[in-house]
Length: 176
Image 1 (cartoon, rainbow, N blue to C red):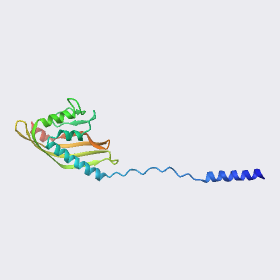
Image 2 (image 1 turned 90 degrees about the vertical axis):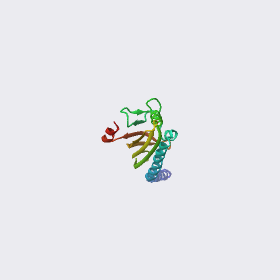
Image 3 (image 1 turned 180 degrees about the vertical axis):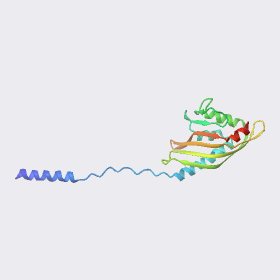
Image 4 (image 1 turned 90 degrees about the horizontal axis):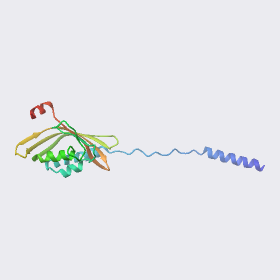
């Protein structure tokens, strides 16, 4: 009888354990990304970029760029890719040279469009530039490129990793 009682208790214990239903592990809810807040922030940053150009504020522009060795620019005046932050063919040298060639700059952005990735870590920014400038010889000039920028979130800050300024065929012909 005692063995029967132990067997019944063991069966009850086995039944209780097997009937206990384990809840599946809770996966965290996907992080909600506030795309509009990112667009608003990037809009402010792009307007600050325009102001930095107008002020020839290289330090501000430098802060907006990633300083990685594989960042790139397709400049409007040369065929070769500008690559990396440092070096004679780097983004830093490109900006320093461009800014040094102008005594006065009035850089305006219009038609700004920003597309943010669904996970909120990358963005493509496009806009038109109206850049009225005076070169170092006092000669006024005007540049109106279409610009595409790629930005990524790096260590909690939005950094530019690519830029492209392009012109229409008619604009290129007029420059010659």
